[in-house]
Length: 206
Image (cartoon, rainbow, N blue to C red; front, top):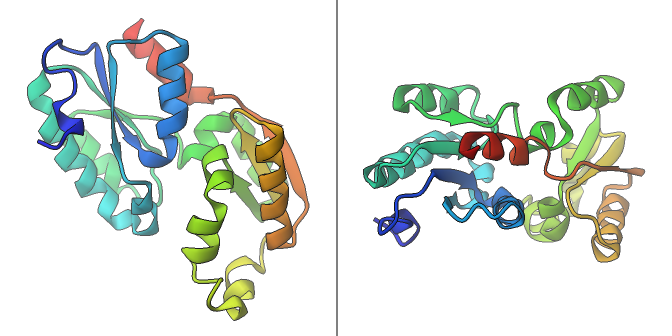
């Protein structure tokens, strides 16, 4: 077991949450704010989103490593671009996950996200995590710092940016504005809080 996989063995947790690293900060805030001392979090690297085909088996390995703890396991992932492969693994392992295709949907709420998408399919979504790591994940991750000529290939079909803000601050707002300027798109802000990320964890330990 890795260090994360050894969590809570001395005292059996009420719930173990296998989380995408992009949700780690927000999930820990949910746990701390609601005094959920017996909810334990085990994160997988956020960089798996660059190769979503690797997510299902990474989640399976984490589930099997954590199962000896004997606590219920919940998966804090959307489908995350796996095309249903993550759901197939979770069904085989008997583990539920957050609803929706990705974190944008369960932060905003599924109906609200569907309305935003119908209103403008060409929307580029930001979360607090993506705002904080925009340069590393988007600019450098897509190679745009080295090959700016690729910009139109990636972004020509986008029409706006929406920042789904979990815990907005003036500093984050400045970074979101800078991201929108880089993308050459207008920015809108929707304050979502933690959305279904919070309610789904709370209902499992109520």
